[in-house]
Image (cartoon, helix red, strand yellow):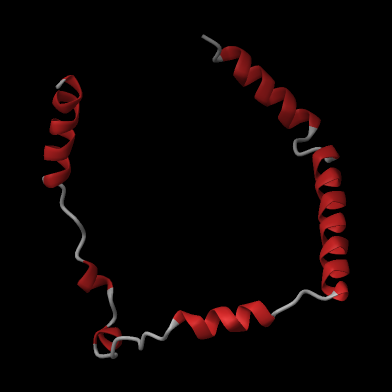
Length: 98
C-alpha cells in the first residue's frame, strides 16, 4: 500500500504531461507517402545466415582496432592545457573550494 501512495502521484503527473504534436514535425511530402510494405522475416534471416566474415575483413578490423588503441594512447599522453591555462584553472579551483 505504501508503494502505491508513492507511485500514484507519479502516474497522475504523467497523465497531465503535454506531448508534442508529432504530426506537425512531419514534412508535407511525408504525409502523402504510403505506409511501407511489411515482408516476412524468413528471407532476411536466410540472407544473414549466408553472410560470412572473411579473413581479410578480420585482419582489417584488427588493424583498425590497433591503430585506434595507439591513437588513444597518444591522446592520453598529450597535454590539453598549456602551463598558463593549467595554472589559471588550478587557481580558480582553489578560490572556489567550499
